[in-house]
Image (cartoon, protein in one colour):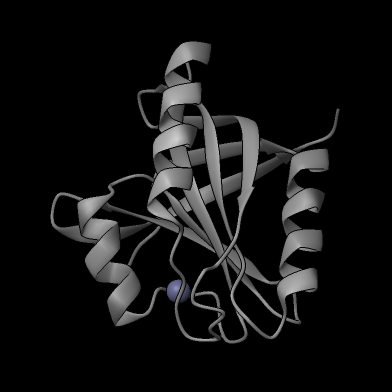
Length: 140
Ligand SMILES: [Zn+2]
């Protein structure tokens, strides 16, 4: 993995919402869908949709399929794209081998928040490799 020009912009209120979501779910993994706009290599988050990890697991997560369908339908109506997938790890903020499999299928930035340290990283699968995405936390 190497750093890049890929950038994920999220406002501080949304980022804190993700942290609180991860804290509530700890020691299980928490997950969320981040919708917004993609321009070139810049992914801007406009809407955070917290989701339930239906696996109640500390090593993996899964979102209910009907929840996903509804989320995509609503985003389409609002003119938003899926710009990132968020989940927490009660471990280091690096993608697991299972994460990597799904990252290849969903080539948007994957944000991982490490619990309880609150370290975080984002990576994207592009050109057959996992590239680090710079996270910009914007004050409102
Ligand atoms: Zn993971």
